[in-house]
Amino acid sequence: MNPYEIIKRPVVTEKSTYAQNKLGRYTFEVHTAATKTQIKDAVETLFKVKVAAVNTMNCRGKLRRMRVGIPGTTPAWKKAIVKLIAGQKIEGM
Image (tube, rainbow, N blue to C red; front, side, top):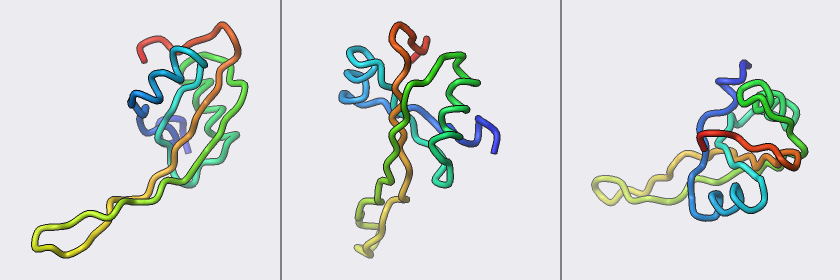
């Protein structure tokens, strides 16, 4: 997989924005089959920064009601929290 297939999008929430500003941790939605080393390499090549650690978690899909009351779920996805080396940051996020 190339880096653009591994990193899908940044996750922008209040909690992730706080982690970016105060702790230097960035949150991304990643490909479900990506490993920690692949995520680390992808972030380093795309954003030209050094990664200190990568934590991942699989997020289950949530139950939702569809049109006629038929139950359904949103898709499951994988989240990666990337900690950068002190003093570095990703511009534009």
